[in-house]
Every structure is written in structure tokens, then in C-alpha cells.
Image (cartoon, rainbow, N blue to C red; front, side):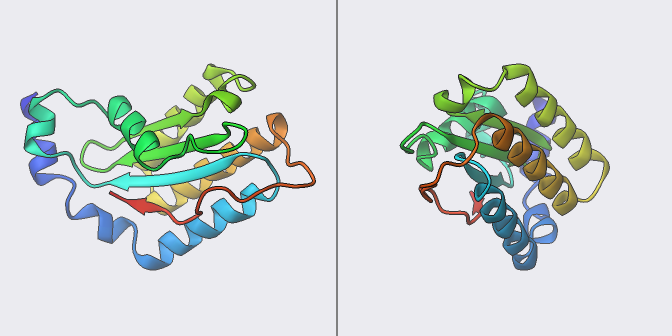
Length: 164
């Protein structure tokens, strides 16, 4: 717990503007928009610098927070329950993927875990923008395979990345 407190108090607040400047966020937005032309899924990318002191003391875990963000951003609010949240917490360098039930019914949980683990490795070992764009490519490929776009592919969620 002490390590998590230190990381969240001192480790994440400065990373967000350095790792995700406006130009990077535009490229992420464009990658989401381009990918969604090929499949019926709706992608959302959210990045959070750190958790509050009280959240860490209360035991907030990245998976739990990602599920909260999934709800908060209404990623679940799509016609075919086809939302996917890619969540990155910078202080602890933790990543989570949350897929709505329409997609979860078609894509094996192991596929999501593999993508998430690869993204975590890429974030830890390389540049954040490259890691996010590579992860979005993998998600888009998976959704194109299992959830291809229909003739009337509605745009249900904004493509803009979200900073929490």
C-alpha cells in the first residue's frame, strides 16, 4: 500500500502532459475514428494521471476504476452493446480493457488479456503514443474479425480521448 501511495502522490501528475500532448491526442482520436470504419465496435481511450490519496487508502484498484470509467463515460450505451474502453493509469503504469457484453459474447476473454498484457509491456518499455496506437490497432483488428461493420455503421460514441 505504501508503494501505491507514493506512486500516486508523486509519480503520475507530470506524465500526462508530457506523454499525451495535444498532437498525440489528435493522432489517437484519428486512429479510433479510422478503426471504427471497419467494425461495429465503439472504442474509447481514457488516461488518468493518478488516484487520490483517499482512493488508494480505500483500496481502489485499476480494474475497478476502469469499470467505473466505463460507466461514467457511458461506453456501455451503444445499440449493440459494442463499447470497448482502453484505460491507462499513469502513476502505476497500469492498463485495463473493458469490453461490453455484446463484444464479450463474441471475443474470448483471453484475447483481451493478451492485448492488455502486450499494451502494458509496450507502455513500460517504450513511448506511450506508440504503445497506445499499437494497442488500438490490435483492438481494431480483433473487432474487425469478430464484429465487422454493417452497411449502417452508426457512430455512437465520441472518438476524442478522455483525460480524467
